[in-house]
Length: 129
Image (cartoon, rainbow, N blue to C red; front, side):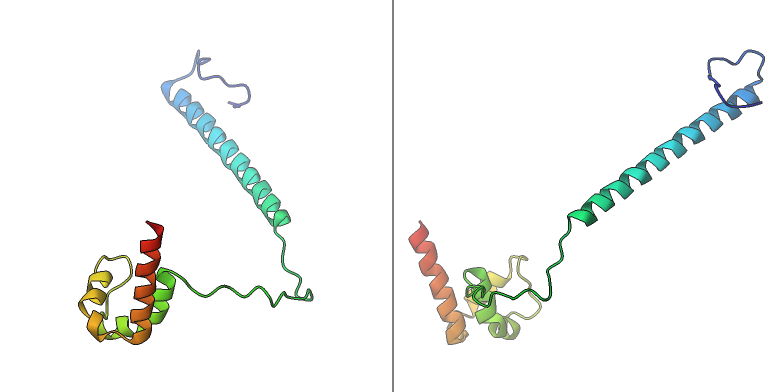
């Protein structure tokens, strides 16, 4: 029995098994159409994204004047205090809430660079308020 033009409501003369089979075929067809449409849409999106991507020209001169500014804030502290953190607060990571208290607990033993970075941050916070 062909499926073309089949309507689930048009089941006169069909057994329950035939009706069930026709519904299954209709559902599979619907799923396949959805998959094909999604794949086509995804391929179109990928093609658009790739066409919008620009790669830097390796032959183009680089601007040597664009050197990133020195680290400030927490980045400067992490840079200046990395050895102190490794010595006094091994195993602790930024964001777990334990690193700050650990550094404060060892304040008197910190390196001069780390102490200066912490002092600089404290000064900057005081000026912002």
